[in-house]
Image 1 (tube, rainbow, N blue to C red):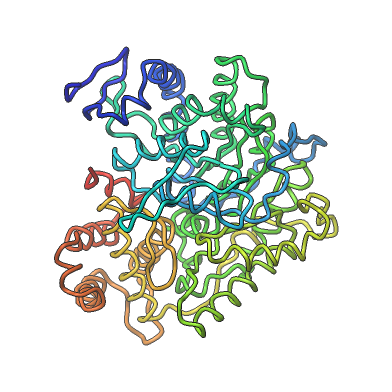
Image 2 (cartoon, one colour):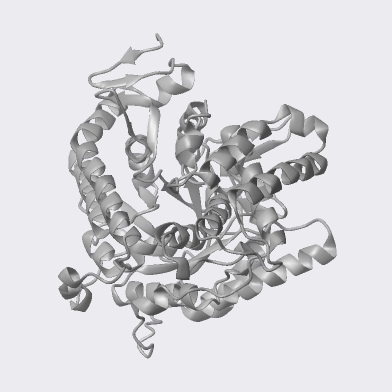
Length: 532
């Protein structure tokens, strides 16, 4: 097919190879076209509304609960219900949609695999298409992968339940255009996964299940509800066949959790504490407020008052409505060195015990090697229950806007700033090279952690903060440290890996997004220009 393959109203900039022909069938493209034509204009309006909300906050207004939706918060209603195969989600593993990862994740000691087209995938065209092929094959039960040594990977009996995370509303799919504009990546991911898999999923007693990221308002949740309802009607499926778990990972959304659950009540099964993105969003949303500047990333932990309040409010809100409250990510990677590994597992165990004690129904891990440890924590907490919907936290004092916005004390250190630079540059380099999920210094990093790293420094520069050693954080200091840390990265990785990578481009992008006068919303947007 030629470079500019035209269908009804969508234009594809990439040639169609064998995999494209399997996924972008005429029927699938027809469905995608319908969704794009019907739902893109409203999506664009929702993104514009985000800008307006941000403008008001930049001008001094603080986020708060909405007065106009008080009746929804006080009303006595519940979500439609939760399918049987999602009732037990005590441990979920997340990861990108490459073939080996999909097999290993579905085979891990977990209940659910969140297959990720979002923060742990760099959306190069080949990766996005291959991801759809891999998930289709996994659902059919035919997926296999052979490594260079000839070892064959295949699914074990009774694999984890598959949930697909689509891209956020802000991310385009630049390789497909409608009316000369890139289409929403979210609709591309949803349409193709749903189209190819809903029949097979329903036939085996599961269903088309999704994770929705980066939502900022109940109106965005209502948009998704319309998308899901349209898809159900189009294929003559009962209302509520499609189920979603929505990530509360932006600061504006934490004030609208009841409203989000209500807007999606036919389709939603739970909310998730997307803690890393939430920290990033706290910085980004309150970027103009000098009294809300966060300290070193390493010291912003779940026991800090603003994060603990967020976790408890999410649990109370969800359980009152019959929805799950999922815990956040453990990003640690098990170590081959015994002492370090004991430290890692103890760290993860303590974090998950806090979540389980708070009442979360389950939690996330990024590496199969954490499965046994985390499973044991939730097994103890749940006892004979499949979840903790019975933990209502009725005795909690009401959580206020002040608590959710409470500044977080802690030091800003030179060591912390340098670590931020090294993590962000290495992540950006991996991302623009097509790899969205990478181990860096013993943590499985995705886009969220790089976002925290670069927005923290931007905020310190913007508000002329000083480090604990008295040095003022300026653009010049950042540029000096960036140059010095590039030499450290080069030394750590070795000349071979460094010279064959895209580190110079990554450093330039890091400098651009950290020293710009206006904070760039998402590093993935300028990063996408550098991706195939």
